[in-house]
Image (cartoon, rainbow over the protein chains, first blue to last red):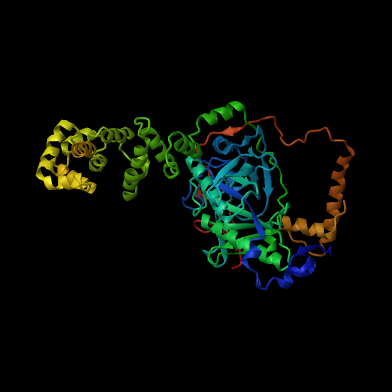
Length: 514
Length: 96
């Protein structure tokens, strides 16, 4: 056996061939936080996203989630001899759309490949995927790092492939049950470069990917149901090192928190391992959600030899610039573009921009309000406060919200012109959601909510109040400016709550401060 | 190319086949003969020849995204050696 040596700061040079099994069971004795701080975490993520097509990637059976077992199949997805795959054009269009959204280069000549392995939920004995010619290369995702600063995570590639069927191991004591409804459902695999440095960055990266695929409506982004899945390639190295350590692939994390937890656990495990003078074994490990730890999968499972070769049954596909332009024209404004527009052009706070761009249809609703009003901050407040809480309370999606954005703009105009107070506007809103086609002004009149902003009507009321409290007026003039609020209250009372507070304050001040 | 027992074992594992110790020498010999035969291709200089992958010149063969479930639930399961009313049944894949 070739003996390698690693330079371990604690133990000195240690022959690797002796160490792994020997020390594996020892606890990380005496390793302190500053030891962990010497290391850097390196993570690359592979995200699989199920595409929301009607039919499967290479055959016309339904790709719908759910359905009774084995009711969405075809000769191709069943792997029957002689069945030929035919490419679903939507699969490619969705992959291109995603590639464009992530600023990737789109490949002109696309070939497909067979990835061979035997498993009961893959009846063909191979997965049709893209090996040497992924449809997208390069590109990037902008995420927030741990300090809230923008960080670019570069992408290696995005390729198209198909899902396998579903195996159920725990339904029966003797057999594994197979449902092939999912076999052949189109997937894109998004492979990042090893640019991620903390578990929080991994979490933020996944959040961003999920936001984009949902925004493009190409995947529903549900990690619990498995329509978005993530494998993590994790390694550690001493800070300042220029080469990567041996990487470990961790699978079976079905929420974003799990990914974060798995990375944290794996980082600690690998550092402990290196500190004990062991080598990291390049392997595939399984995440156990119950314990928050990872464990090695049996070597048989990880000893893969996929023998990729070109798929002769799917002719090559050439993607022209015209096709790319056509798909680009269907692209909705992206969350990060909207975010930039809201913060930079509209000068909204980052918090507002974040909330407004979280859901595509809410963003589009907001976009329409601001077509009809220049008061964007008011529009943002209406979205974030009144509309969102109404939707939440009623478990509604904005798509089913019947009040038109123009109506919201009308309400903002009513407030801005001083016709109604903002609290009156809330009362109007309550009526509007019951009767979405009603006109806010009409409702304001019916509910007697129109406020008096005509100073000639308010002035006599002010005079009346000042005449009623001569002693207080004296106190005010002697410097007890806090009494203004009391005068305001009296004026509002005298007007039956309908005086425009802004106008009333002005008149009061004018009369008192002479 | 030399075919040793290790190669036979690896190929057998990948193909999910099992050979007894008595069968192995024969398999090894067959494989060697096949490889030698294929090796004949190395006599040709193919450095300027594009690999032939497709048997036709068709490109961009695409299908509209429309559903056509061509196989019924019953037909899907008809050839399965073991099944129940819903599922294919296979020997347990994971040891619990």
